Length: 288
Image 1 (cartoon, rainbow, N blue to C red):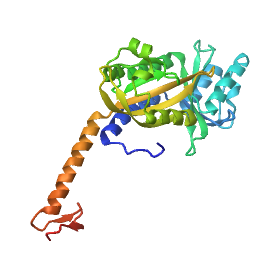
Image 2 (cartoon, rainbow, N blue to C red):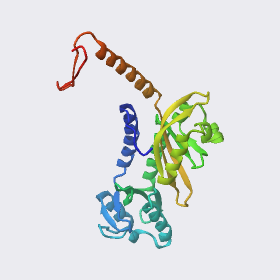
Image 3 (cartoon, helix red, strand yellow):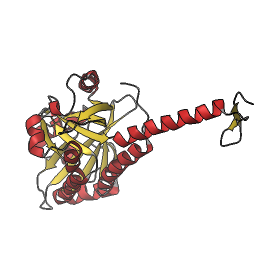
Image 4 (tube, rainbow, N blue to C red):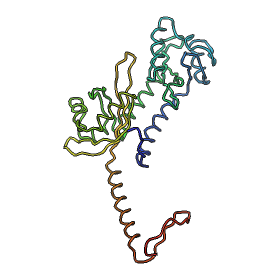
């Protein structure tokens, strides 16, 4: 399970599409702060500086503490959000309305190093009305993605799915919520149990499983699953499922074609020489 399987070009394209959509949402938010784990600013871009200056009449610079703009009566709540982000979880904190007449929203995103430890916290700074626009874009991405997306609990209870998931399995939202994970995969599958154990240990997992449609048809899926917690500590899971049935058929056809070519090469009565695309000699058949 720890050895990552090679992804096909088609799967990479699908994943890049959804990541590209997420990236475009983030790029629409230009006000960024990078926070050290103690709450001091590492960097702050001009857009974030302007928003904070307009709202609080303060000029923050690298090395300053972000706590200086947090109202005293919300410091405890802010501390919980920062601690949550430092532990690797996404979080959102709203600063009450001030002189601009609207709330300011801080979206905390942990940034990890190569050892999967939190390196620093990236903070997206937005007025509340702009955050609503982002939420609408993310909702549109959820509803219209061609990847099956499941929001659930670690126990297997399904809370919500997108349209692609319904098409993939043949269930509607209410049926998913009623039946949960048990009807989607073979509960006796050792690979499923192994993936759940890895997710529990590492917080996320990637692998391939045999899924079951409503009509009983089994089909292979690529699964990306991760655990996250809300600010109260309740655990949820986000799951991306990609139907790789077509890829499996292509792999079978490629294997069959390769075997035919090898047989022709091996037993052809004439001399056959094999070269790579750069003209380098590779091999020769027995007839040569």
